[in-house]
Length: 418
Image 1 (tube, helix red, strand yellow):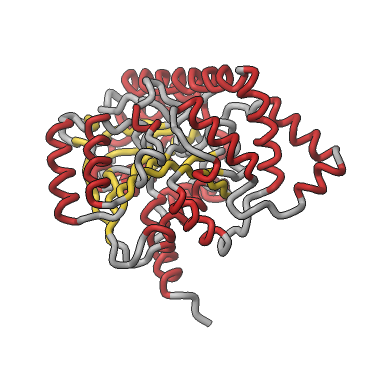
Image 2 (cartoon, rainbow, N blue to C red; image 1 turned 90 degrees about the vertical axis):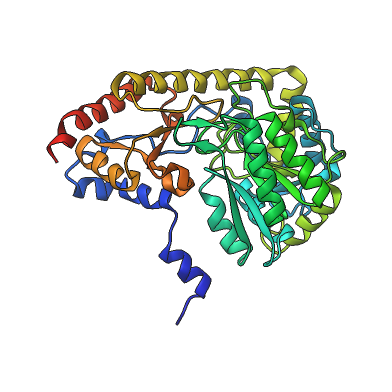
């Protein structure tokens, strides 16, 4: 019995991140002669701060209330409850300046599922999508499954010579406009802040993207998974409204800000006709979002937006990761001295290792017990680079320093003997 050709093709070309995480599996670590408890991993793309206590209490209260718990066992409407959609619309306006109505919001199982369904909603096999290089490694695989046949074009935004992100805005705008006019993409997609670089596209470049897309009738998708973790001032493009810009779409995640990685829920803010299309697709993928998570978020946001505690919580967690980012840069500079990017938010930095990272990373793991993610899966510009995540170690800054020190010692001694 045969699987589909598409699935067989994807099995044969798995995500590079998943491959390296398999390498970090406990059994594999033991087979390499290492102690799994002694391995220091900079591979994890997750936050490690605690979820809001008020949220945890709400889950408990609902579970102990027979009537409320009974309600969570029923279907909601496909785009989510109207009450939560209205609250999310208010939240987006209060914190990010996005003007929308409740009908401009659709709630889904996660931002991953919503991105998949959005690709199905917007893209035909003859269309083109423009991505950045580097960018989130999951997009290509999602496109293969959701929109097979769609052509991908990449705008390089990392200068590998100077190791800087969009060092010349005007020159990058010129390259974008030439690439846009030549390839005519139906969609331009970028994260803000970016994964893997934790950088932000400059306002001038995004302005050119939005203008060109509007003139051509194309869509601009902003993946906002890390938008509550900006270390800089918020870019104005996070506040672009579907009421003013029909083609602008914001994808939002419950994973990072409140450590809901396993409690999957996300939402999209877009124009009415995009939401209508998403609803039809979502009827055939998840049918409706999780009712328990929706009830908790509805009650939670109603409370914390009113008393100001949400803003305090977000400020505290952002500072936690800013401190971890600073500690990571300090450790890189002290022990490795390699070019790296200064995070402007999010959980990551990227470091130039000046050699093929796919080959270096396994050696580092085996000989130093330290795991990085090879950069090539995020784009050709990162072939000789690694992604470093400080998110899981936000409460253990000494481990960040210890990991970089181990790598430095191995590169200084062990590598020279190979």
